[in-house]
Length: 380
Length: 213
Image (cartoon, rainbow over all chains, first blue to last red; front, side, top):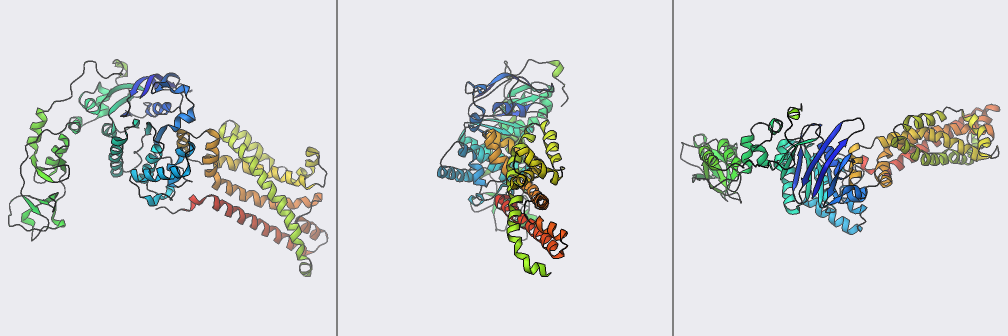
């Protein structure tokens, strides 16, 4: 557990980056700090491993005041991932990953084994081990950055915009893979981002900071989307929040319809409606319009615009599947990807209306300051 | 040209002492310039003072410095140590800025990552910052090497023997062949220094020659 106790950082030029921050990052969870630039999120992060020393207040790591620890030694127990990975350009990939274990004095064989294990764990081919960072793509470098942070198996990780320097497709991959990794590792993580979507995706809880380093709201993502504490948070959380909040609502049992399917390579004599094409294992491949078919279905005939939702997934995924399918019938699959049926948008909407929203809590958002009208409209 | 045919082997002993008088200061100068360059980076206010003061040393005429050295060091006037010390001053003059700028070329995020991983100050300097400054330092070292080879020849005027002797003697006795040989030998020696330094630099920086995947 990481606890900020009335932490303030005032820089020599007088700017207050962080103002009386009280915040707890629970063990085994991802706590995201999010806010516009100048909200002190990175400063807050760097005060944890004392890259920046607080002006007043204290930060506790599992109950120990970090000011009482030796900075360099403490840092070896805290994984650190930054935007451009910060890899050592003059060290090979394995050497980069093994950096902290080397500082800790592990023997060479153990470092080597651990580095190779992590390389695979973050989804990199072992053949990159002897390369230098400049030979890797940005996304690969970032994976190495994560592997390096995990090398000595630290209980705590600090991540400063770790995925924001890569393109959106790679970013999403990295996010998904990191969440999967975190499922197994249960690290205590503070994650800084300026991207509210990333915050909502990655966070077990999200702390929204406003300019001047004051906590605006701290809540789990679903609660944040449904009950923003004030105008600033509502603005920051942004548009479509009703729709996005559906991501956190598991689908109830939706009324599924059985769907007429066509096997890949089969022909049909029907000419009326959209037909769903599946492969040998009954996994949906795409939709075809029979009237346009001139023989057996080939890859080229498929309309792939429709998304596919898992029955165990969220209401958002189910609704999106219905809206994106050219037939307007949302494709629902089981966890192994096999088709179980289709659902229509109005049926998903009916399910949404029946579902509960997270309830407003009376003792709203532990740690958030009392409403302060003056700060409500801080320019961002 | 018959002079060259009869006497060309003199370039070996003279060339060797020339190489020592130019090369040893290069090494000592580099060793001195590293902490100075580090200090210039470490304390922002010290940077202009350290860099411009050391740079100024280079403007002292070499003959003057050779003659001053015995007074400063208490050595004999003919002692080659005077030349080594003077050349070290010139090397430092050229390399302090180079080292400071080389250290400054280390990307910020790399330094931060090193600190955040728990590298202490000295270890971070030796293991991360200094190796990354090598390409810039090597470039400065090549300049200093050529400069040293050229300046050392002046030492003939204070009686310390090296390839410069050929130039002085060739001029005094009006032997064009000797002058020519002296110039050619200096050039060749400068070239050897350059090749050696470049090779060492390459060996120390394998990461700079990797093609992007």
